[in-house]
Structure formats: C-alpha cells, structure tokens
Image 1 (spheres, one colour):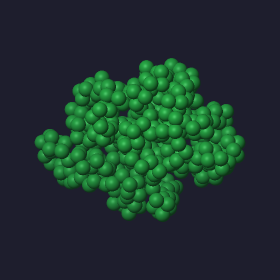
Image 2: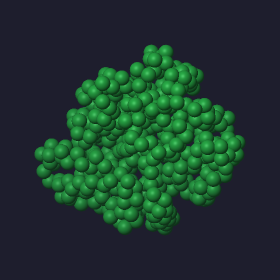
Image 3: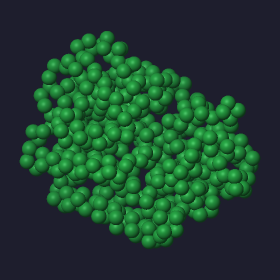
Length: 453
C-alpha cells in the first residue's frame, strides 16, 4: 500500500467513508454482544470460484501470476477484480456492510486494525503454522507486525514500502557532503549548506504540509508514544513529541522546506531535475518513476538514503508500509483463499510480482532472487526496512494522523504557537478516542483494539 499520507480523499467521500465505518462498527459490536460468535464465518464449501480484490496496479498485473496457481489447483477458479486505490477503502466498507465481501483481498496495513475491529478478517495463525510456503522469519519483522493485533495474525504481507530520502548526489557534493549524514544535526547542517548553494532558486527539501508521514516518523524516531493507556488517550503534550514537532517546524521556518502542500507542486520530477528541491521524503513507487522521468544525464546524479536518526547511528525509524493479503471471515472458501496466499507468497512469485508491478517484495529471500539487495537505488530501502515501526494500531489511526498533520501545518503557517497547537491536538484526539474509552471501560477491549474474541 502507498502510505496514506501520499493520498488525498475528497471531504464528501471521507464523510461517507466514516459513516460506513460507524455503521460497520455498530454491526460488529452488536455481533460481539448478541451473536455469541455466530457471525465468525460460514461453513467451508467446495472451492470452485475464488474472488480476489486487488488494488491499483497490483490488481492489473496479478492475473499474470495465476496460470501457475491454476495448474496446481485445477479445481479453483480465481476471479480478480481490480479496485482503484482512491475507492478501495470505501468499497471494502460498503461490501462489508452489504455482506458482499470477496473471499480474499488486498488490505493496506494501516487498515488492518479497522477491519479486525469489524470482525471482517479471518485469524490466520493456525494456517501459517501449518504452512511450508509462508515463513514468518523470512519477512521484515516490522512489516509482519502490522498484521498482528492482540497477538493474532490477520494478514500476510504481499509487498512492502517505507519512506527514505531521494536526493541529488551532485548537489549534496557541491554543498560539501560526500554522503547523506546519519544524524538530525548532520542532516540539518547539510540542508543549511544546500540552502546557501541554492539561493532563491529552490529549497533543500520538499515536505508537503498535507502529508502526515514526516511529523509522525520524526516523533517515532524520538520515541514519542503518541497515545497512552492502551491507546485510549492522546499523549502529544509530551517532551519527545514536542521536540520532534519543533525540529519539523524548524525546517520550514528556516527556509529549508517550502510551506505548501502536495497539490501546489507543479511537476515533481521536472522540479527535482531543475534543482527546485534537492531532497524528497518518499517511497519505493518513485524508484521506477525517477528512472523513467528524469533525463538520462541525471540518472547517475540521484540516490536514495535511509533516514537520519536523532543522535545516530542510523538509520532512524521510518514507517512500516505496504499491503497484505487477508481472508474474509465469512468466506465459504477459506482454505482455497489461503492456498492462493501461499502461492503468491512464494519467493519466485514475489520476485515475478516485483518485475510486473515494481513493488518491493515482502520476503527477504525474494530480494536476493530479484537482485534488489545490492541495487544502488533499492538498497536504501533494504537497510531502512530493518528499522520500521507502526503508528498505534487502532481503527481510529487515520483520523488521528489527519489531525497531527493539521496541527503541524498550523504551527508552520504561524496560525498557532507550538504550545497552542499541541494543546488543541490533544483535545481533538481525546474527543476522537471517546468511543474507544467507552468500549474499554465496559470490557469490550477486543472490539476497541481490533482483537477478535
């Protein structure tokens, strides 16, 4: 999954989405209180047609991998539906509310807690333990952990992403740095040196104000918990979060980053090629884009680097991103669905999927097979994926993240002081988590956290 910070959803669509989520949570709560587990799945039926929903480019290319599955499992027919990422979340919620979920679907890993809370996902631990194809030790630990809620595993990573720095090697060298510094202090020094070299022609780094990834990963690097007491209370008025937010805001106030959102960037690749900014915090989808869109004379001039750490040695933590494959709890074809997960999880299929989609494999052995570990541009992701972490794994996280980005933008634009913005953020998130506290207080911790009973 592309990390949600890289996307925007129209306000009306977000309202519809939240309404669908509220209805779904209510239905899930009703099931917890009154159904006695009756809604936990239908009886297994002979598998004849398996429905798979896959998002974006993944939905376009996965069909190319299925002939091999058909040879092994001639009795299973796989019907693939491609779903645009912009509509995927709402479509899944609508399908859940209408009892029309596919047997198997791609799920962004930040969505896992929400769909576990809805009781929409089948626990997979028993099947994983019995599988020869799904080997948890071969996955990046921080990515695998995004699929576990309350000690139960609900998805198997399909591909991974995280954020690293893309930068102009030539400009960094002109500023006196042979490589990307590994600490915040060294990074800030390099940005200031670039500022002096660029003058009014550009900015050292692009950090779109409407994306939450940068302030959140800086806070995680500093060790800020973000939430406390079983993620039921806000914890932003806390020294480590305030320090991370001050560092982030300082990049804008010192003229090191332009105070604008992603929509205000005319052409990302043309601006990068022209030196209008020298660094960009982004994910692996841009590996292919940079290779295709930058002029030939710049192909040796750009590089990638893991994130600096607050005090070193690096890398500093980045966000655990990507997408997983999950089985609908109500599917009549759970065994067949997991057989497809096993097939798509094999290192050969992971490497083939990378060649088709450009997505980074979830399995480390597939990196070796695809030659990615030593690739000069992909290697930074290999290093960074050893040091990734998830934000709090709760259904409300997406809305919490929106509020963090809004609070940071208010400080950058001078609309609020840092103290006032943090206080307002604490208040906003406290209100947002009120239902979670209500459920926890009544012993409904499983539903609040997404852990199935």
